[in-house]
Every structure is written in structure tokens, then in C-alpha cells.
Image (cartoon, rainbow, N blue to C red):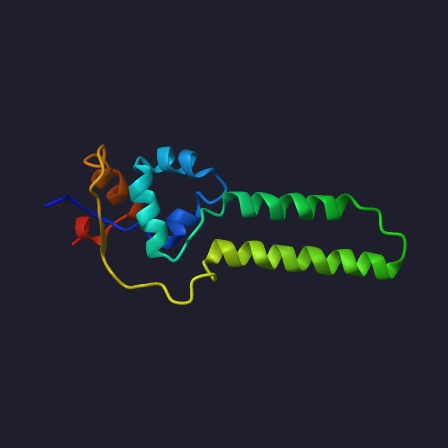
Length: 130
């Protein structure tokens, strides 16, 4: 039977959304298939790094734009507000209709034996305190 790896809390995964998936995988100390299983568990079909980068670039361009009239300035501010709201929705996980309830993801990939300890440490599982 393959070892069971507890799923990281969504908030822990979200801390790594600003990194490419390979960097996040290394920072968490888990394999790519295990990370992908966790993201699928939370209804994340694509790692959001590139989308967040795109939103951030667009916000920066809008902030650098010189707006001539008050109407143009208002439009820029509204666009920035919408983009920031979209960024926050991604970070909160609003793209997932309902987060499934379930304690673990099966890890069948090589190199995951050490991931159990890393994930347990990162997740701050209550099994240590009880």
C-alpha cells in the first residue's frame, strides 16, 4: 500500500502561488505529481503563477499610465480595483465552488517518502499536539 500524505491546507499552498510550480515543489519538498494531486484536490486546474504575474504586470502598467482627464483616471482606478479583486480571489481560492472534504492524497511517486515529514511539518498537523 502506498504511503498516505496529508493534504496541505489551502492557505499553505496559496503562499507559493507566486512561484513557478517547480520552485513551489522544491520549496515544499514534494514531487510534482504529489503537488498536482493536492492542487486538483482544491479544484486548481492550472497552477496560478502565470495568471498572477499577468495581473500584476497589468496593474503596474495601469499605475504607470498617465491619465489626462478625471474620467480616464477613474477608469484606470476601477480597472486596478477589479484586477486586485481578481488577484485576491485567486489567493483565497474562490475559483473552487466547494472545497472537498477529505484527509489525504495517495502518494505513489518516487521520492515521496521524505515528503510525509515535510508536509506534516508545513501543515502543522494536530496529531503532534494530541
